[in-house]
Length: 255
View (cartoon, rainbow, N blue to C red):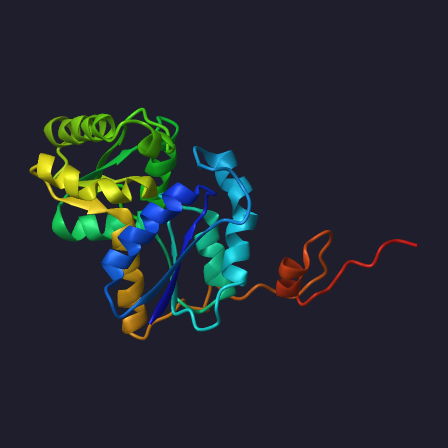
C-alpha cells in the first residue's frame, strides 16, 4: 500500500519530522511518501497562510503517483485542500485534525487541543464544529509558540510549555485526553506522554492510521453529493496542471 503525506507548508525540517512520524505509524509494509507544498509560507499561522498554501499543496496532489492509495494532509486545520482533493479523487483524503479528533473521541469523553499561537484558537474551534466534535472538545489552548518555534527553540523549553498547557486543560477544562494541535509536534509525542497522566493523541500518526484503515476497508470518497467531480468549464489564467482539471478549456479572449 502507498500513501502520500502532504505538508502544506514549505518547511523542510517540519516535513522531515512529519515523515518520521508517518512512517512509524504506517509500519513496514506501507510505502510512505512525504512532500511539502511546492510554494507558500514556511509555516501556516492563520487563514491567509492557509489560502496562499493551497495551490502549492494541490500541485502535489495532482502530481501524485497514480498508484497512491490514500492522501494525508499534515496541517492541523480544516484545510481546504482536503475537501478539494475529495473532489479530485475517489481515494481516501484525510486531514490530521479531523483524524485526531476522531481518535480522541474513541478514548475519552472530552478532549482538549493544545496548539501553537492564539490565532489558532478560533480556527480550531470552528474546525471542531465543522467535524462534529464541538461537544466533545473541552477547549483549545494556545501555547503561545509559533509553528517554527517548535523546531528552533530549545527542545526542553518547548516541551515544558506544551506540558503546562496540557495540564491546565486537564485540571481546569475537564479534558480527559490531549490532542497535539500541530503537525510540527509530531516528534514530541513520547516526551509529552511521559509527563502527562491523560492520553496524548499525535495528529500525524492519527491521520496516517485512519487513512490506511479506510483504504484497507476498501472504502473511498463518496461521489454522491458534496464531493462530486469538478465540472469541465472555461477557465482563465491557470497553469496547465490546474487547467487540465477543467478539461483544458481556456476562455476565448475578446477580439
